[in-house]
Image (cartoon, rainbow, N blue to C red):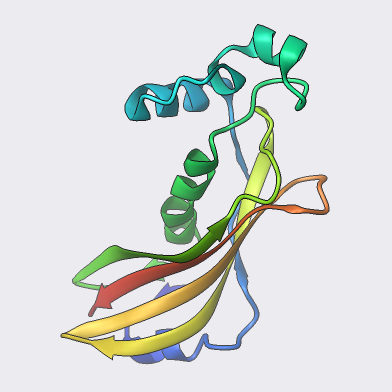
Length: 149
């Protein structure tokens, strides 16, 4: 789906959510996230210890790593033909279930609101990240973006 105007975004208010493709969260990605952020807690980066001692039965992705996937998944779900777009923030975030390494995730994006700001529009997206085979989502968030067409 290609969006090239504020009107295109407004047309998605209350529409069916758009689903991203599935992606796999692997140990290498978790390790690189740990290095980039300095969060090297063993439940993320020590698979042997995580299998022995973690209540999750193995290593899990960082919650913030899961959250950081949202912009990339949005970019793979809708194409925005714009001069510029920026991540503006989040209204709320909950990590509702762990993401074991090896999990497949996808996101659903629903436009909650679109409002005029400066020379562009601000969009509030209701985002749900789900893990294949799990009934519970792994993350729910209100993600805010700004778009300049």
